[in-house]
Image: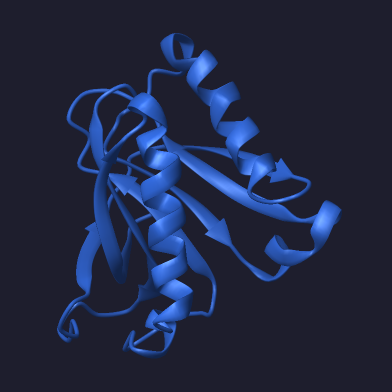
Length: 148
């Protein structure tokens, strides 16, 4: 079980009609172009998290994505940013390996194809972009899926 708090920027999107690809590309761009990482208080580390939460149904419905960083407190959320506590009973870990973001996309396709067997909780899933996330063909990103 891993519970944590995150502060960052968010968008509501859907996987239908490639909407998420466009929305998330825009959100990542905003995170770096606006240097959101410099505005996040009480950070626990420099790792960047992409959290998928507030699912309307399953992976075919609407959901909210938050790109941000783990913090030890939600007492101070700067204007324009969002804060959320992420709670999961049980997590499954996947590791996307290779060129980003393609490796992450392929890993999600694998997860979606196993949706029926995984018994996903659809509370919160997240990706962790740490030190290994930007190493070209040798990149690694961890993906955690909440399960029931």
